[in-house]
Length: 150
Figure 1 (cartoon, rainbow, N blue to C red):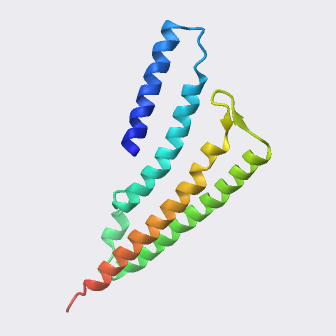
Figure 2: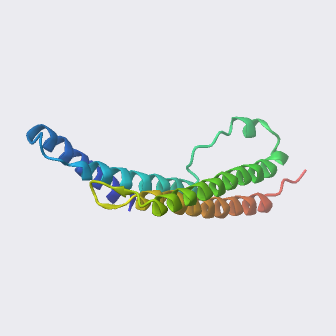
Figure 3: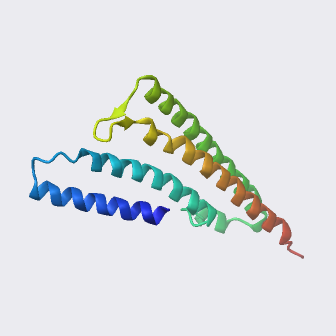
């Protein structure tokens, strides 16, 4: 799904650039709005995919220097911080969508509600929160299985 979205963005951008130079008076604002919508959804879904694969950006410089006994508490703090951020993002995204619907914001080129783009934030935050908890629980279970014998 992410690859299809990126491909669609590339095609829309290419068509927009070609038409801008060949047909300078042609209004193609819908391509920019379509790319913005795709970018918002792809970004949020891509972050959740990164969490699922544990390939998200992480700074292990500090945790690598700590003793093994600190791995589990660091993982719990990391999960809590990521979870809190996603809850905050969900909450602020939900307020954004409510305001877009309340005031009837529309995208002029596509003639659709701006809430379609805004919905990427709370929906993506919910999916990311699920992945944070899923991967964190899996890593905690792995840490519990590995026992160091003296």
